Amino acid sequence: MQTKVNPTRTGNSRSLPGSRLPLLLLLVLLAVFLCLSSYAPKLSIYQISFPVFNTDDDFADSFARVLQRQQSGRCLHEFNSSLKLPLLRLDSPAELDPKIRTRAAAAWLRSSVDVVFAASVRNAMRGLPGTAQQMRRLADSFRSVAFVFVENDSADDTRRFLTDWRRRDARVRLLGCGGADAACRMNISYSSGRAHRQGWSLPRNQVENRERGIVMSALRNIYLRHIYRQLYRPDRDSLLIVVDPDLSFKPWDLDAILQGLYYFRDRPELQSLCAHTTSHDVIYDNCTLVFQRTRLFSQVSRESTIVSDFNTTAQPPGLPPVKVAGCFQAFTAYRLSHLAEQKLEYGPARGETVCEHLTLARQLMENYLDLGKEVVKENEGGL
Image (tube, rainbow, N blue to C red; front, top):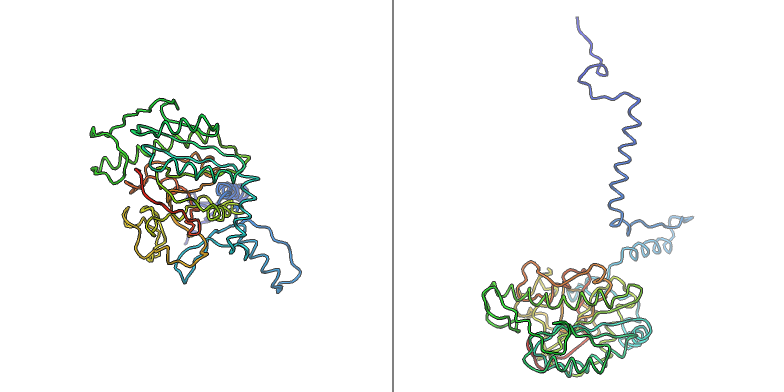
């Protein structure tokens, strides 16, 4: 005689009484809701409301839906298959004309944009007087201006030049040793006991190279913190332009610079734009990160010379800015809000020993090198 077992009655049963099923369902729905809520910021760009159409075969309506979806999750660049480069996407035919960009930028910057020029300087008199003149010329294009310098341990007249400039111009701020007029002697040394000296190419061992990057980052962060606390206003459009003032430049082509700064106007996602700085007809900054033929973003030859097949002088005229993983080029404009709201600072980055000046840009996602924003270096001071 067989014994029949009712699974709903056995002590080993996993079934739940009918009265508990609604409660279980409610808990599951609550968990799903909490999970989705935690990802809401990431998913928000895809949560788009579209109008209800009367037909399902109307191309114009379909096109509008796709365009709205693309603009909601805005991608700034597109890949140019013939040049094998990721280029900033232009939004209208008018943007192809640099004269139109220059005029539009001039009107926007003068009426609506504040700018802060910033630099860390030491023994900079070879290039500083000329570069200061170029910065003042460009400054006239903006609504309001500030110049912020961190100076330390100069053996030349760099500090005296800056203190004299500050006396004549209230827009100049001098940091380092409390901003005093007197010489600033920080006397920085590495753990080896050797004194820190300017110049990335000076002979150092591996530890000293790493410590040099820490020292340079710490100096640059002095001006960043001052700008965040004293100059940044979240209710105003602001750009931060970081320069190497100890370099000697040929006179800046202001139209070339303005046509590049134009791209910040209607692209709030754009975070930084580097100049196309050249020396002896080749790209200046050995640390520039470019889109190589390997189709991979990577540091160019691990902190050595620029990849030889990226010859900027051979690129077609009028080429839109190239998307890069990071660059500086001795002249970079940053959207200040992207830096200030996150309190970003220079600092250690994996694999960096020489190119610490890239560690700010490498924390951003939308960095571009503008081949039309050309700045020409004549000769080099210390770095």
